[in-house]
Amino acid sequence: MVRAGPGIGLPDSGEAIVTDDKDTDRPVEDPGGDGAEAADEGSGSALALGIALGTAFGAAFGLALGNLAMGVGVGIAMGVALGVGIQAQRRSKP
Image 1: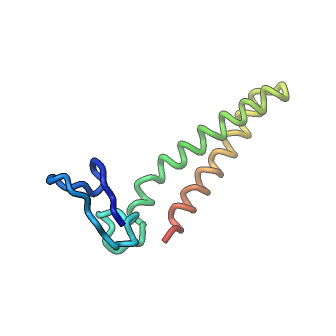
Image 2: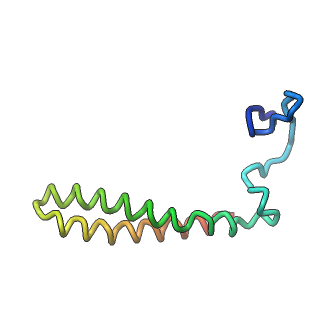
Image 3: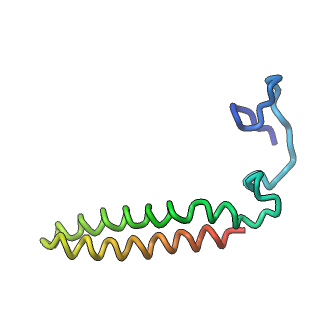
């Protein structure tokens, strides 16, 4: 495989690096490849993203039904569940 570009395998000389390494998604700081360190880094952002998306969806849904407070409340609950689901999915990836 040939990869080239700034920060993507392009050495200082300007030549592309040819590699047969199939496991290119593994972060350098995770030599074991279990992904636990990478999953821990994004866990707070996954929860925040889930809450933000759930709240936005709940607010829109609440406005459509005429009860904004209930929609936001349900949206936050959905967002927490979504965020926890995202965290679990990230942790379960090999």
